Length: 162
Image (cartoon, helix red, strand yellow):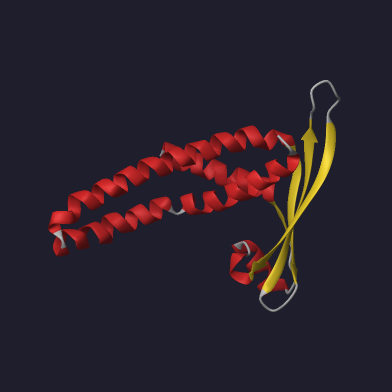
């Protein structure tokens, strides 16, 4: 797999992981608020709504397990993956990912390649800790993406075992 593909997979994993990270909170809200409301307002739909969320929950758990497995397979290829953030206007920021990736091609020695990906993002799309740092210090910082993904995957694994 090409290293740039690895970086794009890592970025996609970030987005999917964020959605899945809130799944248990979403289900808690559904159990405490949505299902009782459906029961009172549309009792004939309660079973269908509960079944839909049960099926969706099964899919989310499957995706969560797949993400954890993919991350465990992908991570050894990275030496580092750092994100930096730079303000370009009042609302627009540039997120620059710089990754060093081990690359092995059959029959050749392992090489290390540097890859950079830049994208413009809005303030609300900056990671929470980066926004907090900017508000506290007035300067944007760096984020160790590998370390953050490891924390997220470890947290997801722990949630799945409790």
